[in-house]
Image (cartoon, rainbow, N blue to C red; front, side):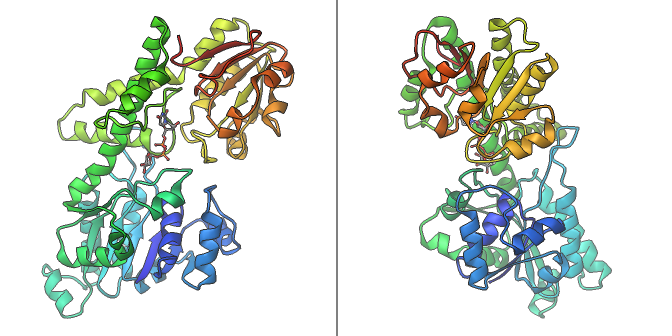
Length: 447
Ligand code: UDX
């Protein structure tokens, strides 16, 4: 099929490259000129394993191209995927301004029956609003009256808006897109559902579970999944805090809980709380949606409150061990909100570093991919080329992201390089490792 993808972030670029390698003709569009220019030269705007190769294969096969011209791409396409961002606004709601702009451009541009698919995470009711915007545009163009289906039968412009949330995780975006856990088609329009089945035929043949539901249900299904993941994380973090007080080990408890099939092992890693571009935003947006319709969530504000205090825990612990931080040299391992990504959006590391810089500490960080993004936000932060360089002569080491390479380093070697052998481990990297006697070590959930 001929596809236009609007937005070349994690969802749009990875989905576009994946569709191109499944035999679809894909045009990925963005308003960011530098990004599109870079993509044309093979420069990826985000760091994801396997993405450069996937994009190169699509381009080489002549199935994937990049453009700044949304109108032309939409006019050519049979199906348009809206993959633009929905950042968190000051009022805790997702800002859907860019989504509505895409809907307007879609209404201005289509020349034949076309489906608009919202892959971005949006609040419930967004597809409905997009539909109204498109209808208005088509009415302005005298291309739509109140009987769109009849017009479609005559071959006149016709459209449908489908909700098709994407569940990929950063760091494993390429793998998740190729092997989705489920295919959600939010629509009650038989033609649009058939088009969605066609574009996703290879997933359906491979046995990916498909659920067709209303658009409102599909929109809510994504936010509910992310808010539930947030709940699991805050739950295990509270258990971790209790473990510390009673002398228990949260990893053992998580392992035991995870073996219960009704619970499952995922998202039970205690640490310094969740961050990133999705889980915090979607949890806040779900609370706001409830509020707007007169439903006040009881669980989710508590989930958020636990996360907020959990994010402060490393700083609080360091202050207990080190009442005077001015002039101290403190190493930070990991800046990204999780391993496998260079993304620092809502990363717990940022606040911790900011607090310590404000205390007058000298901060030296190491992160394998996120240093550039962090440097833009924290100009006073110094960077090391390796984790060991960061701990040289350090008075303390804080671990904020569990990059696998950290676990491979010997604690003896790390301790040898530090002037004061204090390790505050926010991700439990060394929780279950034998530690040298001269190391003062604290981690979440280990009494
Ligand atoms: C999330 C969802 O997992 C994904 O399905 C959705 O499409 C987008 O949002 P992502 O933002 O990439 O994906 O990150 P995720 O792997 O969910 O981690 C979010 C945060 O939770 C990270 O800061 C991570 O460190 C933290 N986390 C995760 C924990 O603290 N403990 C866990 O057990 C799991």
